[in-house]
Image 1: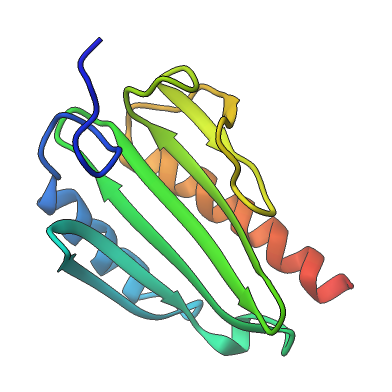
Image 2 (image 1 turned 60 degrees about the horizontal axis):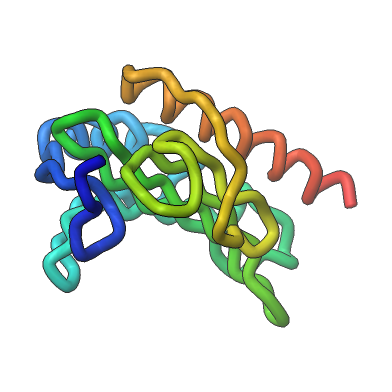
Length: 144
């Protein structure tokens, strides 16, 4: 097995064109207030901030961070910030010592190790799955 890079991700470089494609698509939705490709601390990623109106008042902010690598490894981290706690989960594909290459770190704290999983190789399918799961979470928040 190839060891992960220093950021706990993939041994491959980030696929900037995929991040820019996703940025364009997500920025065009009403649910997203901002989608920006950034290189914070040497970690190229797409940072998505969801529109506050998409969430009930109990959620201070919700964001998604996507790293997609040229070998189709990825890290997708969803986080909601509440007044007293954060609620988060993560979908991953990368070499690691704690799970299979494809795995999910479940809510509410995204613990490690996570749960073994199986994801599509197509970034569009993976992001659609993630957005569908976020939509289910938002529906549950509004129902509470």
